[in-house]
Image: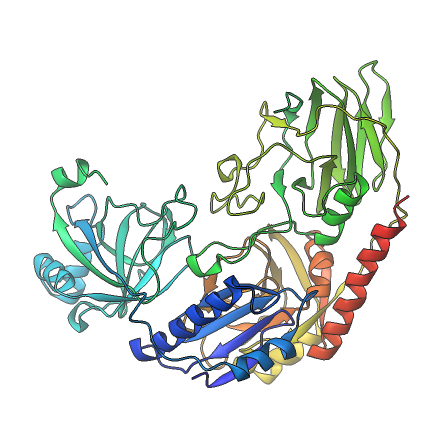
Length: 228
Length: 317
């Protein structure tokens, strides 16, 4: 499953699942991540402090005063992880308002792509997306793949502040800004839904790697009246 | 619930509560945080008989001015720190680091500045009465994660202390002197070969300047530009403390405790764990060099560093 294992410094292991970014490879990463997470939770592997899945890599961080690279890689060699993500995967529907005040880059994107704004939104709403990973800022989901016709580069100059709830697209990916943060993605809408809830300490992140996410359009009035 | 607290008369530049850090949340985008200098953080707790992972106040450059209200405390300050104890009878005592002190009601601690270092720690016996978030006291100011709404301490705030009174104060001391090292040991990073031969040579043979654009997230360095011959971006992937990443401008950045959980810049190197504390203490303007070690050497260096910390704890009298 893992193509190559190497050390990232002296306190982490770099598991490489391949170069490409696609759902198939990412599902392997997620399966491996979920499997290891369970072992760590059940105290079956000592010293692991963090597991970080991404598109095609998994980083295992550990406490060097408890374990080391050799000990953990030895355990990894004995594991038989089955590529199976189906049982944990959820379907999540996200409300999205594409009003002018929220869709900050829709008009300029429409000009760059030469596609009417409404068509961009329709193409966007018409697909179900796969969550590759979460991170960068707390709970931010990296979703994909968006329709080929609406793919575009990042903004030339990133925004210093992207409003909380913003829904952005770049290349084959889309995401949701769970907090106000700097960022360079093309913003095409905003959700009133709390995608990351700090107060829910046990399960703060609504969207997890492997989940399927789709969006539905709401009006500004519905946005303002939105109540979870 | 105790009613004993420090009133913050001056907050200092960057004072926050920290412990060892927060684990098992990288995968949702929450980083480790925790004390930048783990060794002297641990020693600050050991000096006041605490659990070694108790939350303490970390300060950077200029520290806070604190007035004790409604009780007495046993405290210690660790680091290379200039501070005074202002007794309520107006007597001023010059404080010594790595020593415990008895502070009476209405006395003040004036943490003036750190000397030739960045971070210092203030621990009180029994710890602070602060709520843990995700099993840790550590605050990440940029991400607004942790107790105190993820904020650093500000003037006029009150920091409550769990124990309201010190019974049987016993002074404890430790002979400690920090190692001043300007050579940072690293292990080659996963993207080492993205860089030209010339860049690799420069990285190991020339000096890099610690800029003042350095904080708990990372340390930006300036020096010979490191020429990337493959790709200045990689597909975003997980990061760890100590990673030396190089964005397109060619200047390396060393990642620290509050770094983002994932990122897309090539990793030229990773600072070995034994060198994290000393690296974090380098003041802006320092000139540093990188030296390569292999994994076995790094593990040996960590073992001796870890044992030395344990020895220090045993030496506290």
